[in-house]
Image 1 (cartoon, one colour):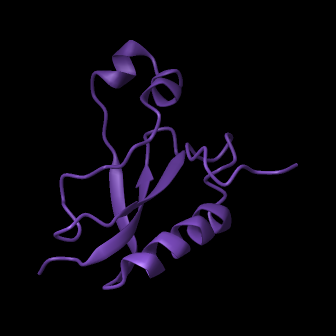
Image 2 (cartoon, rainbow, N blue to C red; image 1 turned 60 degrees about the vertical axis):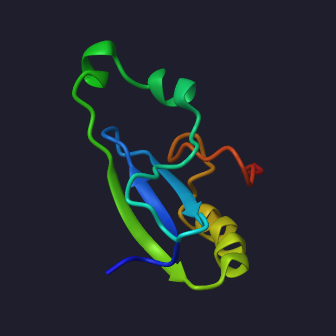
Image 3 (cartoon, one colour; image 1 turned 120 degrees about the vertical axis):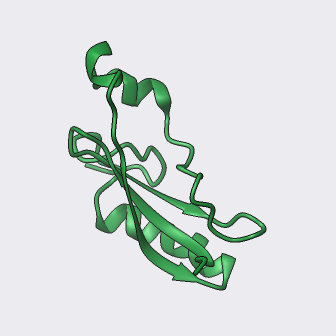
Length: 97
């Protein structure tokens, strides 16, 4: 069974997370892993660690409504604190200290 539009959580080997959405024209694609900043992620790992790299992808929200998914993405980023550089790789919804 195929998912509609989704919000997903990626968990990296170091435990940090990235929250993203997939609102492509045909719905969620299993191959889509978001638009996180590769340079920031690569800086957290050695070359050896990057040579055997596993991501976990969890679907945490689904809707048939693209606007609802877009709205909820920010709420999930904030609730999971994925915008805190110590916790996650999201650089939108800047954490204010």
